[in-house]
Image 1 (spheres, rainbow, N blue to C red):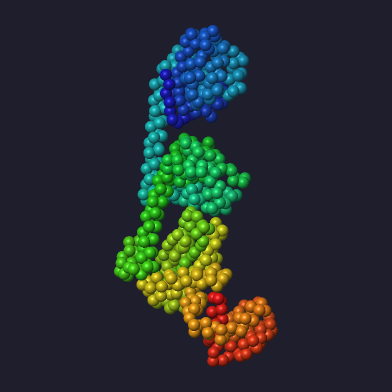
Image 2 (cartoon, rainbow, N blue to C red; image 1 turned 90 degrees about the vertical axis):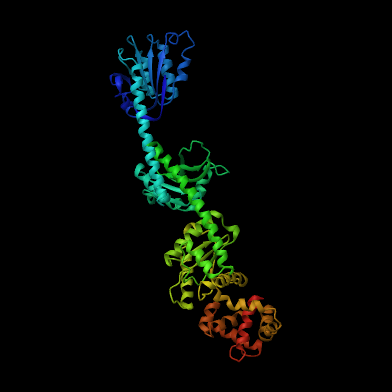
Length: 562
């Protein structure tokens, strides 16, 4: 007969059961401490099987399994060939140990003993008065007791994992509980590379900078799945992951065969006992539920937020309706009077990168201005910063510019490859006019590209005059004004490859300050004086100090749009 157990029991513990404690160890006693038995079997070898002229013991191979404690009852004293064949088959399949019995005394050739010692297989002999069949019941009881204990432990771990999920602790809760059981560094990451939880001294790992970078981590883990995002190994066993000089192991978090995430282990899985293996398996199940739950919640939230945002910037909904929608999310729209936009080229960013970018921006913005709102859209992130009560427009504008600059100064290293532009709309009297600020921010981005501005943050205030002129540049009066004022200067620049129009514009912007203008143009003040004199000569008048200086100023701005 044969009984199986899913999990191993140390051999030295099994040898304390029933009559096994009276067995004599013939060889490899030191191996008893290191070996475990996952199954046991009783093998009765009859005189027919013991006959060297028979088809030599082929049933033995079919009855033996890896990590199996084999009780062998010889009906007649075994021949040397029988013993050799038994030993070879037990070694081939990886049995845990052999326990031999015969009603008559057994003799073992010294060569056979030496061979058993060489292959490291423990062999024991039962006294003739203890029948192997008498050991079946106590062994079976012990294996079942261990199974029930592990089942109870598994159920307990599962309940605690689910409890942490229901308590809102997410991936961090799962990893923290797993760490208390395993006691070794462990990390949970989504398939996108975003870390959901970590425990242990990961900061001491030489390649921690790479592991903590979602883009790099996702690239490292990508070869472990096939082209459809599925795990190669149906059993979901941990696989080695070599990262420079660091040898890690990964265990997939799967839904069916689809990989949702990974547990990354900074230790050998073989070093874990069976309780730790069970805990890791349960943690993988819990992590799968948590990642799926978060993904479903994000999808619902994204749809609801997208609808709210569309209503907010479309001017089609009443103020009370918008406030009611916002209250469902726990948002306070008071002091949300302006918009900051972060934009990128659609083809330059993946969906996973967009999500990581939104998370990073949300954390940074809310660190600076708590209660600010951040929305993710297909090609932009829209920020409604929380402004102070009774904040005048100029102060509010300075706050938003400081926010935008703070974002750039603290841009996460794993997002450096994403090129973004930031635009700031005008400050409105209340959130009721927030749609105006949004369109102003969009307009600022358009004018930034039109004017070829290189600085990453642009405000509508910076380009407001260009936006106004663009709307009227086809008017006959504007065309006449342009040619009447700086027309000759435009022609001269085109013919001689000079920058007199640009020099005049900067001089106007700097309120006629020589040094400041020279610094912006990257020229010497003496060179600037020469240019200003040539401008007067070409135009035949002084554009800076006469009653028409505003016309000349507007004309220099209009020239930027042509």
